[in-house]
Length: 175
Image (cartoon, rainbow, N blue to C red; front, side, top):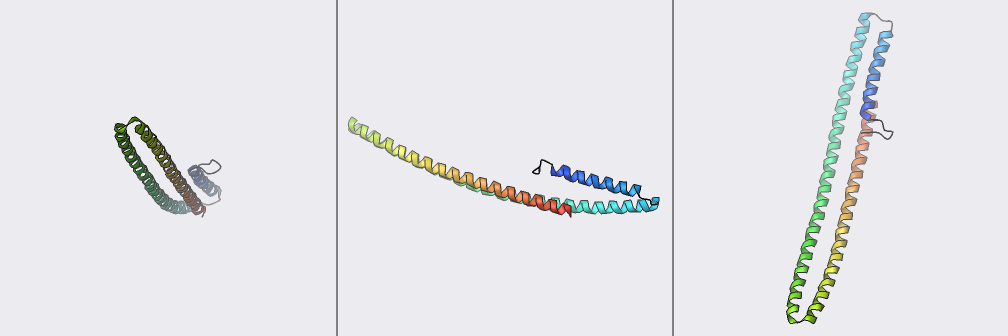
């Protein structure tokens, strides 16, 4: 969780909290008050800090749940799109296998009929196979590109939402 300038948000919050506590204690210790008044003020400030800490904890917990839900939704979307890609690959492989099987059968029958006919059938089979392979390659590439774009979009959306949640949390902490 590093910010744009490389500062770790957690370290920044801890530093701010420690600085606030040290500053408060120093101000109270240097103030011209009696021990009883000083203890009362210290107790009051400790109670205020406890309340703010509890509020910050609740905000952080809620934001964590939101981030988790966004990540889960994006994971499910990615799984759905990749399963579609797998189905396309499986279907195209089956079709290619069927085509090759049919062409091989045709070549075998033609080989029995004569050598010249066998050469022509082999050429047809090769051309058909090449054409099918090119078509399958294009469809697979298109499906892969689509999946890649969906993953990219999902990642960007998750990143944007996460940054918004972090910004909201920072704003909440500043209050």
